[in-house]
Image: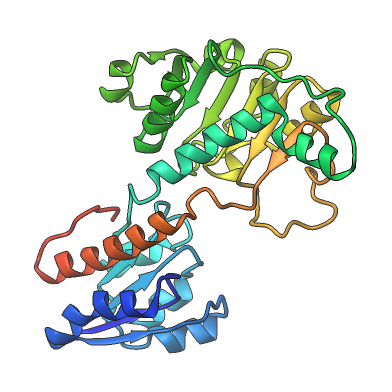
Amino acid sequence: MKIVLMEPLEIKPDSLDQLAGSLIKAGHEFTAYDTFSTDVAELKKRSAKADVLIIANHPLPAEVIQADQNLKFISVAFVGIDHVDLAACKAQNVKISNTTGYCDDAVAELALGLSLDCLRNISLGNDAVQAGQGKSGLQGRELAGKTVGIIGTGAIGCRTAELFKAFGCKLIGYSRSQKAAAPDLGLEYKSLDEVMGEADIVSIHTPLTPETKGLIGKKEIGEMKEGAILINTARGPVVDTEALAAALKEGRIKAGLDVFDQDPPLPADYPLIGVPNLICSPHVGFDTRESIDRRAEMAFENVTAWLAGRQVRTML
């Protein structure tokens, strides 16, 4: 079969050679592209007559899928698959597996780090020192004893809850599907309104779906305590950007964000540019050396399993 890696997985060349070696030895044709592209014509060219595609987090639109009538399987080296046109895949009976779990620790640790930054003014402290200033106005708050609300208690949400618990936090949460692992951590499930109103820190870990888009809107943000912190390492559109910007400007809450409506670099007129009480990172939650190596291994495991007649980490 023809197997195509459509974009680089950001691993060392010898690691890629090792992962692809077993496929080549089994008689499959393997092609890897070492540049990113969102140009439809270029993507069509790369995927032409491929049976299997391996992609990361760049869009795979319907036109590309429909142009490749040989396509049978897509291995997505990412947790979310909302960048793949699922309707086109369903129409052609193209199966999809993702690499869920590859960045659980990475994202959970960043959520915790953003929370600590918001509480202890770490970034602001660095700015002060670099500017030749002292600690005036930078008194922080402790994480221990805070109530943390976890929105979305999947694998990453539960791992995040586990880290907060280690710091002595009380755990509450909201999720459409409740997980047995969450109560085992001491997390108490509540309504969304209750979580937003009771938590000192709200950490979002939901996928982006039609149901979760705008889940945290003006009403929900308005329910947050004075001085509470909103952390989003999930998907930007889960939160109403305009409502969040307004609350941050008012000084009612703080926020730590790794995700936005679009990936950085953000335009100069983006609503969150220049607002106070906000710590940002440029969508790096998933991006550690360990997690990137892990997702590549899992992406190739998906292909090997599918070729053997079984599908792991099934998304479609």
